[in-house]
Length: 197
Image 1 (cartoon, helix red, strand yellow):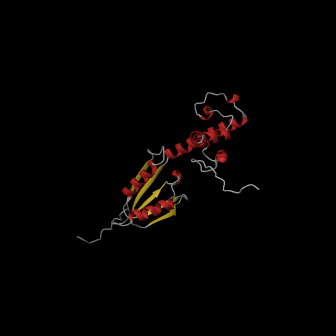
Image 2 (cartoon, rainbow, N blue to C red):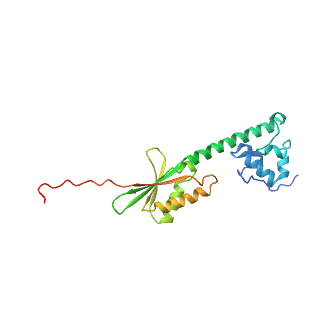
Image 3 (cartoon, rainbow, N blue to C red):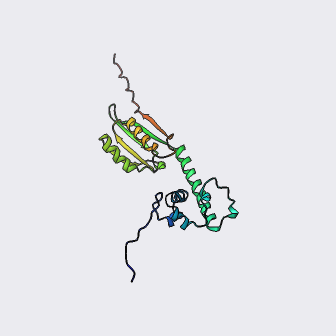
């Protein structure tokens, strides 16, 4: 009988799958690069026909000289790079709007929209704002069926700073616009009283 012992499984630092399944994840290029740097033995075991230069973006090896497995891997890497580039461009062209809505002369509500593009969880951010600003917050669906965070109180500047700090942590999103809008109530003019002096 063979001994039963717990098997040690290596996990990818990028996608958290075992390296054998990285090709099914969304970031195969980064996974292969990371595996090549961190665990060259496993890399050569999983990709025996792949030299170190074929994973580089600036590879000069013609596609015809690669075997079928390497061609598939290269195609997946190129698709993934294009997809990530399109997502980054979409994020860079989007903007977050912080609207300050006047309820009456002294009370305000802050409305934040446009977070769903940046993969920011509105409910978690709402809870963070509630504890950070010690105020009431809620997440509602607006007319476009998108999440909108409502914060009681005039904290638009603080909310803007916090959201900008979140975006700076994501690579490539440092220049995303966070726009502040002031939405004031229209004051109704009183009708003049006839006969008043």
